[in-house]
Each structure stands twice: as structure tokens, then as C-alpha cells.
Length: 200
Image 1: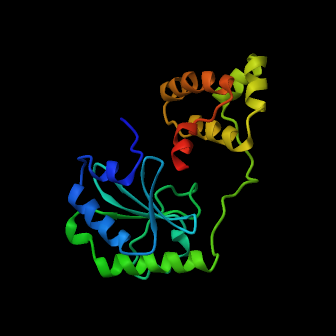
Image 2: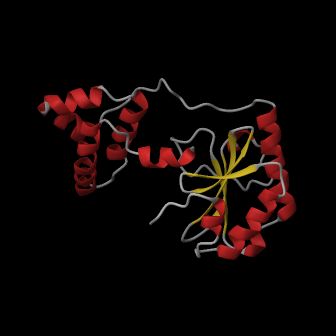
């Protein structure tokens, strides 16, 4: 799938929930937020800070608020899609055009902007210990070159690789993922580097 480089490219590409996503875009573009593409999807920023993301998936479409945990969420529409992993991000999932209450969506967006203006945010836990899964640890203990390459990575990249293996449920999936990442580790690149490039 080709990554979209501009918002218009993204919105002009047919996808699930096309009309619904365009309706949300219209609401977002009616605010002071700046529309960009980050991680291959529309992202709306204020003063360089990520405020709201917009996306469409197979079973739902919706918004994700980068500092959603700080929103009052009086209508209880926000969820943490990755319990135990995500501290600040919250999603608002919708499944029909009728779910789009423009007044309510606008109110949530303005609250998120106000939080950004006030400088309020939850930062990632950067000192959380990195737990190397058994499968990766075994390879590193048997291959000195691989271990040196892994040790040379920044902590954030090490965590990405460790989590990528740990999150796999089945042994075959872990093995497949391990085979994928070993050449990347040797090359000194991160698991998600190709997505980071789209942020600029």
C-alpha cells in the first residue's frame, strides 16, 4: 500500500467509510488546527503539537486524541485501545454517519486545543525497563555481532523490537517476526523508521 504524502491524496483515495471520514474532516478543518499527514494518516496539529488523528478501519472509523486521557469525556465516548501500553492516547470510534454529532465532536476538539494551549500533556514513560523476550534474548546470546548491533540501538528502538516480539501470541508468529527484525537490527535501523520519515 502506497503511503499518502498529502491530506488530499489520502481523502481522494477510495476507502471504507469515505463519506463519514470526509464529514469529520470538514469539522476538523473548521477549527484552528493544521492538517497534515503523519504515520500515513491525517493528523491535526496546533503549534506543532499533535492534537487529533483521523482514520478509517474495517469495522469503524473515528478520531484519536493524542492527549485524550486529559479530556473530561463527559459523554464517555473515548476508549483506550491499548490498555497497559497507551497512557495519553484515546480513541473515539464510530460506526455510522449518525454517530457524528458535529457539535459534540467540535466541543471535544476545542477542549483538546485548550489543553495544548495551556501546555498540559502526559509524556511517555521513558525510564520503564526494557524486557527482552526469550526468543530475542536467545539470539543475542548466541550471536555476538547481533548483540553488538542491538546494544548500539537507542533505548526507544530496543523497546520497539522487544515489544514487537513479546506482543505476538503464537510461537510461529514470534519466529516470523524475529526473522524479519534481525536484518533490521544489523542495519542499525528502527522497526518503525519508515513511518517516522512521514512525520516531517
